[in-house]
Length: 295
Ligand code: NAD
Image (cartoon, rainbow, N blue to C red; front, side, top):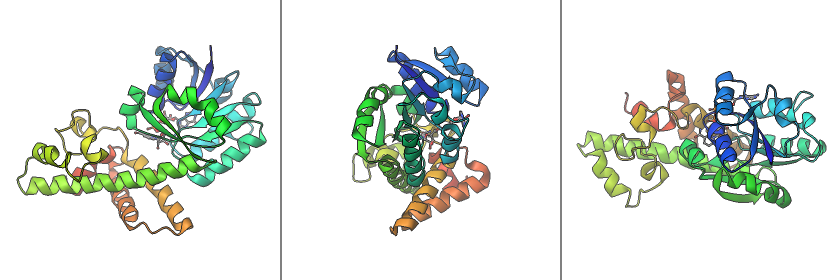
């Protein structure tokens, strides 16, 4: 049986690892959180007791970690996965991290005799559970083909964006657009409420009109119209506002370095920073609707 090392069993990683198991892969799972590790074991994974243990004798290693510093900590250094894995390993990092780190990690992997892909994902926890994620992949063509059966077990679309770092670049551009879109939809529903317009009516109209978009149609921040959306479970994530803020900060750094003009991205960054400063970074990012409304 083909064996995958899986590091990071959080909101995304846990259901992704379950989908690998469902597809017939053996999974050696590791997370610093004992409860997350136990849940993976209960789902049929082998529970590893360290990073080194997770990557021993596996065909590929998938990481789904919060931020660049966690990915670095897991993969590099004498205790890290690059050093512990057998030569010729394939590393697939699905975390959202900055382009520069993604490129540096790919170079370090290569120096250690491995192949590495930056393969951030889109589709949220619902997509991770349903196995319908979109992966935007940066790295060499041959490595992408090697990873395709693994990624296809966790997602519906595997899109090769270009060389190392191109997946990370696509992801931060996507999430900057998403953050701006979510705030725009939230403002629309908050205005509707003040005008006495029913949220369901606005949804019925706008979801088929020119404002239609994923934030509105599939993840509506106003409770009611989309039963699966976090708005119907008191904005429990889902995708935490803190993680969206992390992505926006990466996007803003990239925009500054590249000289791109992104005023709406800057505004969205500030709004999510304010939401986080108000102690609400653990809420789903669609909770910005009630933050904006002073609730
Ligand atoms: P999460 O915080 O729920 O899970 C991260 C897990 O990593 C936690 O269980 C944590 O204990 C573990 N961890 C941290 N450092 C570790 C280490 N050194 N070794 C082992 N485990 C470690 O995060 P998430 O929501 O699953 O997101 C993971 C990544 O996917 C992030 O980069 C996020 O930006 C991205 N992402 C999330 C979503 C979403 O909707 N949640 C969507 C797309 C992309």
